[in-house]
Amino acid sequence: METVLLFASVILPIVSALIQVMKKSVNLPKNYLPLISIVIGLLVGGLAFPFTDLDLTMRLWAGLFAGLSNVGVFELVKKREGSTKDSDK
Image (cartoon, rainbow, N blue to C red; front, side):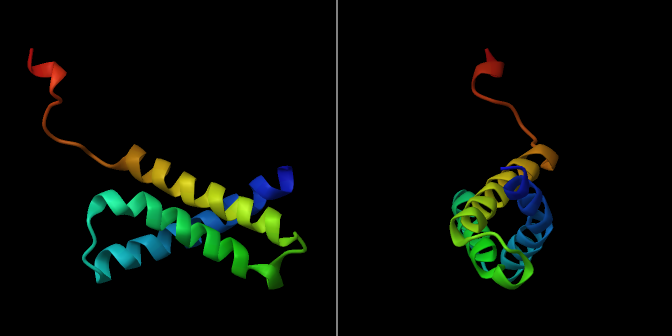
C-alpha cells in the first residue's frame, strides 16, 4: 500500500497539470471538474506501466488517489468569496 501512495504522490503533479490545461483550453462547467480529475487520474495511472512494476489494479488505485487528491488540493487553495446561506442569519 505504501508503494501505491508513493506512486500516487508522483503522478499527482501530472494530473494537476493536465486538469489545468483542460480548464484553460476547454469551457467546462466547474461542477464536472472533480469527475474529470478522477478520470484523468485513472488514465494516467493506467498508462504509467513503463515507469513502474505495479500491476494494473494498483496503478488504477494510485490514479484514483491522485485524482481525488487533486480535487482536495484545488479546493484547499481556492479562494472563495461571498457568504454561505447560514452566515446571513
